[in-house]
Length: 301
Ligand code: URA
Image (cartoon, rainbow, N blue to C red; front, side, top):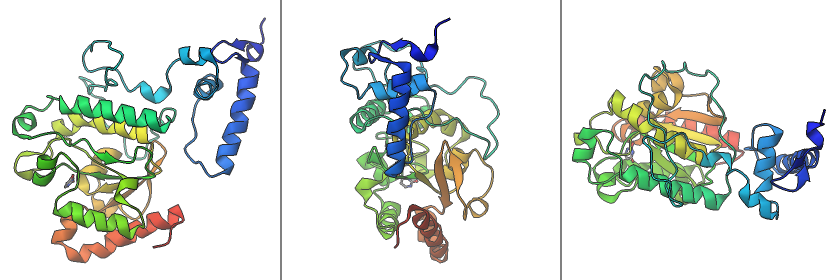
């Protein structure tokens, strides 16, 4: 019987044992220099990840890195070379939501920066053409996909675009956004270094709350964005972001003050900046929450 570890991996011209060794050495090096989001998976998957960086002509024929395989298409799309990565439609008979803190599947293999940016751009185009929620499609000016660094360490996850965001097509550019900018700066971060996105990509009419169907329809988009970015931290701003990401029914008050998990990202829940504008006394709690994250990141205010 063949020793599977001695077989040649045609994608890189190395034996699996050689690839496994190289992968282990590279992983160990990355861990030592502080990289925390390392690829998961078996030797085969790891070898494919490594093969992208090897100067082998055959490497180009190897399967694309895992994050490119965003879930199956909503409807059969034409297979053009520049087609946007398909994003899953919510299942027709959705399984009951996983209870909070049940183990999630982990993120797919991390992509190089340029590939992340390309995928996000392609997804944004898909989102701009989305017609899943009739009422939102009828009332929106444009979709608000999200923006920021595709390799952000921290993602801020909001509820839904407001009037100003709907007008500009950018997240958090209204009054709440100005407060969020201050919160980001207070964390010694810059807006361009983080990533901002929402549970919904369309403004609900008159800023009403997102409806459960709308949240379900939009979920595959934010999941796909997070799969690409794979942040170390996700800050959920307000109830809808927190309950949606964590599939929880608990209040912000019950969820804040500790880290939760989403696919390996540390999730912090805090008050939405719009709420803080109306309830100034809650600002000190939001500041405590951000300080908890900064301490964990090894950053001092
Ligand atoms: N509120 C949000 O939750 N998101 C935005 O983008 C703007 C305001």
